[in-house]
Image (tube, rainbow, N blue to C red; front, side, top):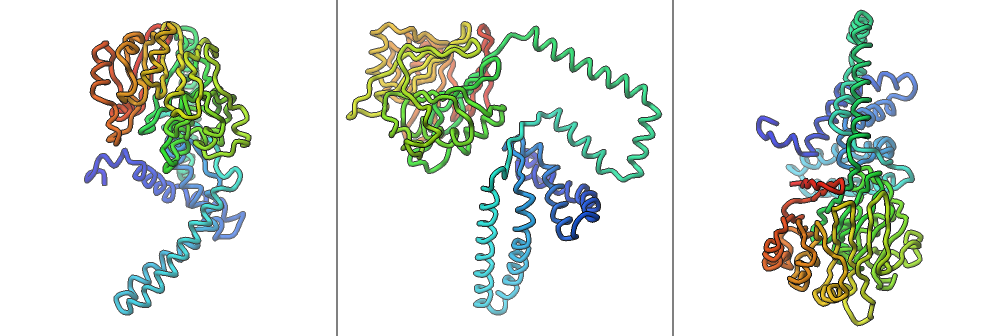
Length: 456
């Protein structure tokens, strides 16, 4: 398969299929023989099949989904019999169709009903309490060690004895090697803790046509600035993009979610986030709470929204030396659009600063300039995805950004970012990054130097 299509090795479906098959071939018999003495043959075979596949695919599942499926064991015991019947009747219907097409249609109808039943059973089991638990990402080195241990465990008894005998004969060499490895690990930990400067990370997450940014402080505290979302909630950005992204970086709790305004492409993702991840406080614009509840598809009385409150202009949040200043909070008036009440936040760590502008309009940019706010920043999140309704020349020149980030969706129907806005950013010397071209954009800084990495 790889000779025919070498790039298949990077596809998650190929990776999972290959590793699951390896588990079924080499690990399932080992587990089945162990379980056979403790339970009935059918149960032991089903459990052995499921466990072996889970064991061999777990590093890949952890990398992509950061979860360990507990419900898979029950699901396989309950649902696999339906799948077996579906396959048998599907093959049978194909053969019957060559002779009696009408009868084949009836068999296929029965098959589809069985498939629907299997789907609903899986859905019920997957939604059971503790059906899946968070599992941290395993890096390449830990994954290799994981598979080496598995390979040793599943070897035949004769081979294990050979390994054990070799270890006994070379025990001193093994002890010295282990001591050296421990010293190297300890040395690296000491060096990294005492010589490496504390760093802050700012991730601009690719949520298509929307804004979503994650800030991770030097000691691992986390906060988000907008969460993305799709209008009319046709796709759950929070559940399908934000949460997997947070889990991948080991974020299981957020100190704050700062929302610039209530539009779905900025706030809808927060609805799924607050249901899965503990959030200390949600800071919003001056729009009514009902607007945010509607965007997140939640009730105003939902427990997850009890810590939601509007920002106060001028207030400052400080976590691990990372300062978040509320630069601008427009007053809400019922007959204006949400873009017109978009908050502006500035994140500062040492000499590095990031300006989050939401969908700030030019009229409010003028207000900020008249009030002589300190908006000079290293990185500018370009307002309103690069729309011509934002980013006046005077405002951009006041910010003096070294980097400009456009949060836009590929081939979006709005024509964002506008060419004139891109040209303006280039004219002030800002290096441009775009989520539609670069994917996720990550800035890492110790407060002095700044490093940028991108997904693409």
